[in-house]
Amino acid sequence: MKELPEKVETEENKKTGFFARLKTGLSKTRNTLAGGIDQIVHGRAKVDDALLDELEEVLLLADVGIGATGALLDALKKEVAAERIRNQEDVMRSLKAHMARLLKEGHSPEAEAGGPPRVILVIGVNGSGKTTTIGKLARRWKSEGKKVLLAAGDTFRAAAIEQMRVWAEREGVPCIFQKSGADPSAVAYDAVQAGVARAMDVVIVDTAGRLQTNQNLMEELKKVKRVISKVLPGAPHETLLVLDASIGQNSISQARLFHEAMGIDGLVMTKLDGTGKGGVLFSITRELKIPVRYIGIGEKAEDLQPFDPAAFVEALFSR
Ligand SMILES: Nc1nc2c(ncn2[C@@H]2O[C@H](COP(=O)(O)OP(=O)(O)OP(=O)(O)O)[C@@H](O)[C@H]2O)c(=O)[nH]1
Ligand SMILES: [Mg+2]
Image 1 (cartoon, rainbow, N blue to C red):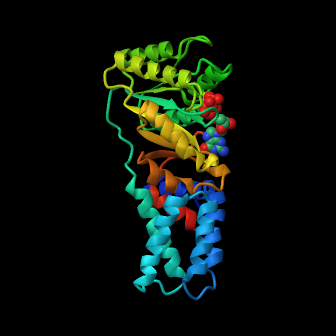
Image 2 (tube, helix red, strand yellow):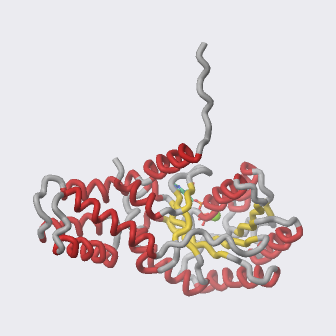
Image 3 (cartoon, rainbow, N blue to C red):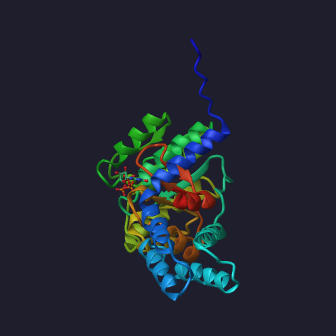
């Protein structure tokens, strides 16, 4: 009997797996954005004002935003004027290149510096995907051999502590928690102290969802941050804001207010799998100058990827 070849996890097929998942996760945005562009460009002989108007419409529909859309169309017009656009492939190529450039401009890969333990504070509005993202990050970093500790800092919502503990148990990492209603700063304090004492590599602190406009709750977050820095000077090393991609352009004002209050180091854009508004990443990058570190493309532990601008654009346009 012929032996089946052993399935090996080579760098190459790891990458293919990464890309395949990204492609699936972005299918709704691909339909609105790349699908829409394709339809407009298809069979058109030249790039005229009518075509540019239609492109604008599609870009705005996919939540690329006014500023980023304008920048993309300007770049395309320049290429048309320079007679570098001869057919529909050229239009697609040009748009793709400018989109990738736009995303790369604001991009910096994850800053792994700080600690140990490296302390990450995770914040955002209700239901944006904070706790799930923390579970996914625990999976990711543990699989890289890091010692990860979670802090159930959402002491407000009834089931939040349990939710964090379930994730911790499933991923096989410790979780610091107190009883429901406890002061979230106290939980953060305990967790960072435990992280130092147990020589952890990473401590990830969950927080209760809150509106960026609620002054009292924003003060509470600031206190959590202060307390963390008292236990470990320099911490938190990264404050991550989790944004739900399906709110589209609204995420920009949300992020601005969180940033003003808390100083955001990085963004996580979740639920890209559930929306056609993934174009919002282009305006986020352009308007905010805060790097997108991770994207969420599903509910499962493996559905979190480091944000890779080139792969993102490639996945959006690949058939
Ligand atoms: N499809 C999809 N669902 C997601 C993603 N990330 C999170 N979710 C889901 O969104 C819902 C809310 O996620 P949570 O992690 O509880 O959000 P949260 O920000 O912690 O919510 P609060 O603690 O209530 O503020 C859950 O049903 C998650 O499974 C994602 O990338 N894709
Ligand atoms: Mg939560």
